[in-house]
Amino acid sequence: MADVLVIGGGISGLSAALLLFEQGLDVIVLEAQDRVGGRTYTARDPAYGGYTDLGGAYIGPGQRRVLRFVRRFGLELYKISVEQKTILNYGGQSKTYYGTLPPIYSPILAMDVNHLQWRLDEMAEHVPAEAPWRAPKAREWDSMTLKEFLDATCWTEFAKVAGAIICRAILCAEPHEVSLLAFLWFLSSGQGLQRLTNVTNGAQERKFVGGAQQLSEGMQKALGAERVHLRSPVVRIEQDQDKVTVYTSEGKKFETRFVISAVPQAILNRITFEPALPPKKLQLIQRIPMGSIIKTMTFYDKPYWRLKDLSGQMATDDGPVLYCVDDTKPDGTAPCLMGFILANRAREMTAMTTEQRKQALAAHYAKKFHCPELLHPINYAEKNWADEQYAGGCYVSNFPPGVLTQFGEEIRRPFDHVYFAGTESATIWMGYMEGAIQSGERAAREILHTLGKIPASEIWQDEPPAPEWPEVPIEPAFIEKILPSVTKFLIGISGITLAFGARAVGRYWGYV
Image (cartoon, rainbow, N blue to C red; front, side, top):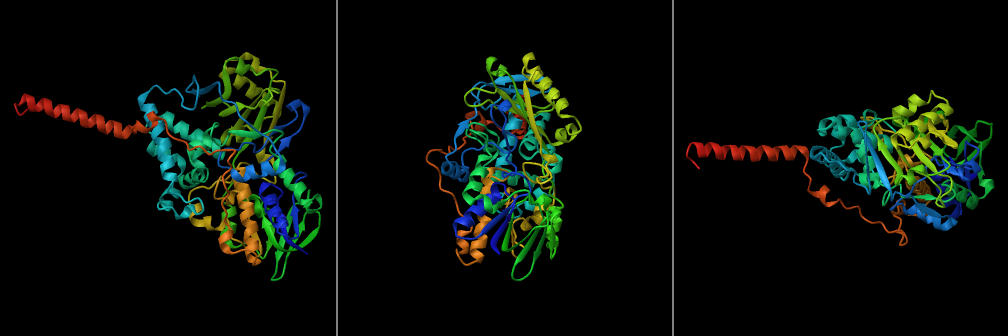
């Protein structure tokens, strides 16, 4: 009988298993797919320059646990290049710019977007990432959708569209599908809106040379192949006082003292539990769908965008891809644009064939980059994560209104001998590789505490900063600091107008 059985051979499950294994426990990992990696997936093919990441790929400052494994396994990182111009497309018009601040020449638009950004970050500071349901305004914020907040807060359609694009980009969901509290929770766990959405000094700053799946493969190797069972979907878990019995779809049976479930909680209902999961846990997993995304890689014979002094980074309000970035290899080979098809667009385009999606993206890039050469990609790769039966979507589960405050406490709560990991249960960098590692190691330490090997105070542990990767604070630009909201601006203008008007009236009547 094993000490611990881990369900799920992604980053979360493997990091939990590795920690327990190195503490001397007998560990087994059951992975449903024919590979490790979970929601990271590196497709290896000479046509892609050797490899391409069709799942989680990016890491940035503050993601210290990932860097620990990078050092341990001798992996190499490289920076995403955004030194050339970025494209912002809105309302049929395109603007190009250097740096992170788009050229918004309308004062009203600039004030509205700036206010929305800093208002969201300010609110997120009041949401404890470990327990968002305890935020001072948790019930109020969880009772409305993000769309309702945007409609009530933004003066301009431009700001509303910007907020919607951010929601789709980081949650793969529409603003009407997630609660305001859930959105703020995600911002809180990821160090704020700027860190989450930036490339330089942000969450998309670096990638792995050779692909992100190497992280899981390194953990698999450290555990030993005999402890990681592939093609082993778990279908039933039976618990009694002394042990847990786990059954796979192939009819294999495993006995263990403890289980760590590291599968997305949204698909936990595919496993039969005996006794059944607690009612609130069952209610939770019925209410948190995964995000909808098709990640695409479009390869060209030349990096035509670079020849036009464009970085390949683009944000737009129309077309199949709302956001794309250069994914050319660090040595300049295999020129490629990585594009996300997100939320409603992903659901709509699922009905198309792969070739139809490829042609739609090529036409989109050719139009937005004003570059007819982009009509003719030489290779194309994609991954529709909604098609992945053991993931159900990507990057992370979404929480509609009312779910966090009613059922949120069930996310990490153990069920007898079963403990829950997975990036959805992280308190930092939820939805990222960093969050997956934190959640896996936390669940492992919960078992170590139950076994009397560590005190409760050691379950949650911070990771020391890495001197080779400084975490530079994100400071607002001067203009961002001084811009008022549209409301304050109009009140100020009204006050000035009234003051001058009163002075004029006073002069007319001889009082001034």
